[in-house]
Length: 330
Image (cartoon, rainbow, N blue to C red; front, side, top):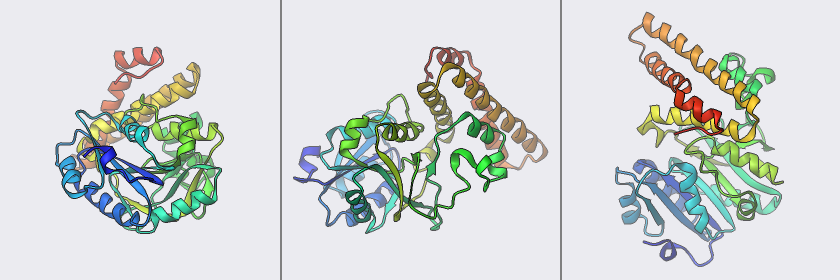
């Protein structure tokens, strides 16, 4: 089914869902979204990044109202979202992860909020874990200081400290509505005119990092980025990354470097690179010692592998050369 055949005549909201091998989560997402938008003029695009688990067949056979965009390779989160944004006709564009459960009143509440706050360009609801607890979904823009706190684990050692809490805002309890610097990209509800001014997602980010960059650009363009706990959604987490955890972990580190190179100078980027090496070096040693003492500690072995692999990648000639040239090689 083509996008033009599936789209309603005058959608108010366009939903873009990027999926990669997350069929069961995608089914739940679409089922809950169908209920939540029953009284709202909308269009839904599922952008499938070459899934092999029957995801696109599910959309084709069970959700005829959804427009399916099939990619013949995994284009990543940013590029796939841009495919949907490019043809979106809604006044608002809502980008959802495939493992989001939308409550019946979620969309209505967020839509009402955006209507009442025309200066807000991007909003995110309260995100819940599967057990109903609040999932951290807001962050500050990363800084050298917060990165060093993270490398030394001071943010987790003193989670309620404003001094050490840093990037992940561990001192905040999500008790009320507020402007934030970064919203998790698992659920973005954006004003289309704001996207037109800000521009699409930066495709230099394959996965991760694009959320920090996107939110930063909204603020720079004069639009407020807002956390709105009056609406809620469940984010199961890891629907796609669980299929290749080591690969996605490394993608996260690439994104961190790419973001820093884009928004900071050469000296600052070099310091951040050194902090990143320190971060993974400390953990490689710590998890190596733990796994040596207790060979049955599977978690320590997995974390040792992730951090050691990242450290090797950071110190490889290819990474060093690409970093020196102002980009991060994939």
